[in-house]
Length: 237
Image: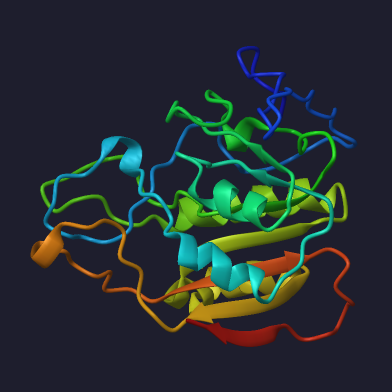
C-alpha cells in the first residue's frame, strides 16, 4: 500500500513547534487497512452528533494509564483532536508528536492514520483514543463498527512493531472480549488491560449530562513483551 500523494510528509508540531519528517517504511506493507476516515461512535446519548464524532478524552483517563505504564521515547498521538491526551502526556514529561485527519486547531491536521506507512521520526510509542464507528449515520445514530476498529488496531500494531515500540488504545471494555478482537490481541504482544472502574463522562450538559453506558479500558501492547508471558489485568479509577 503506497502512501497517498496528498499525505503530509511533515508529521507533527511538537511542544517546541518544530516539524518532523516521517520515517520511510522499513518493509513492504500488505494490509486490509483502508485509507478512509472512520468516525468515533461512543454511545447513543440523545444529543446531536459532533462533526466526525470527535469527543475529547477527559484528563483523568490518560492519568489512569500513566499510573501503570511508562513509555519508551517519544509518543505519537495520531487522533489528537484538541490535544487532551497530548497535554497530559507532556505534563508527565513525554515528548509528543500530535496529528489528526481533521483540523481541531492542535497538532498537524490532514494526516490519515490508516495511510501512514511509518511512525514519525523518534517515536517509540503510540497512544490514542481511536475512532471506531461507522461513518454512515442513520435515524438511530452511528453504530460501532468492530471491523473498522480491528482495522485500526491491526495497522497500529504493524506500525509500532516496525520500531519494537508500545501501543496503548482506549477501548470499550466489552470490545476486549469479542472473538475477533481476542484473536488479534492474542496474536500480538498483548501486555496489559487497564480497566477503568468509573464510566467516562464525554461532555458536560449540567443536570442533563448522560454518563456513558459503557465501561472502558486501556489495552496495552509492547513489542518487547516476552513471548508466552500473559498480559496483566489492572484496575484504575
